Amino acid sequence: MACVVFSTSVAEAFAGITLTAGDGDVVRARTMEFNVDVDASVILVPRGTERTGETQGREKCLGWKARYASIGANPWGCPIWLTA
Image (cartoon, rainbow, N blue to C red; front, side, top):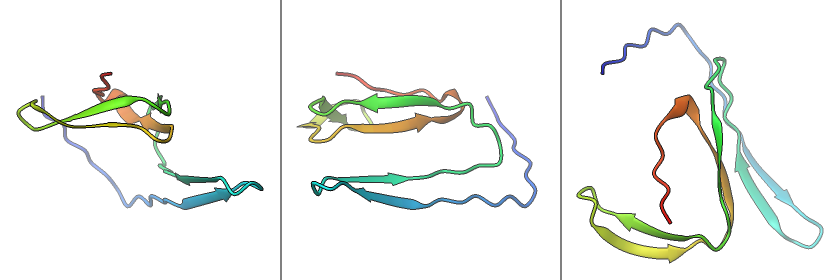
């Protein structure tokens, strides 16, 4: 499947955000502003999730347990590979 995108001059803006709670906990985030609807869904990875990396040949390699939870966006219905 091929996709052709025509675009005029479009400004996209991104900002880094750091929030520090009274107890010293820190939350870091990044905004993503587009002037088009990206039809995004939310992806949440809880703290403690066990993950395994894979090579391009789909061979298992490095494994780890997430120290922190993370949240993100999946634009345009892109496929995501989240396996436990």
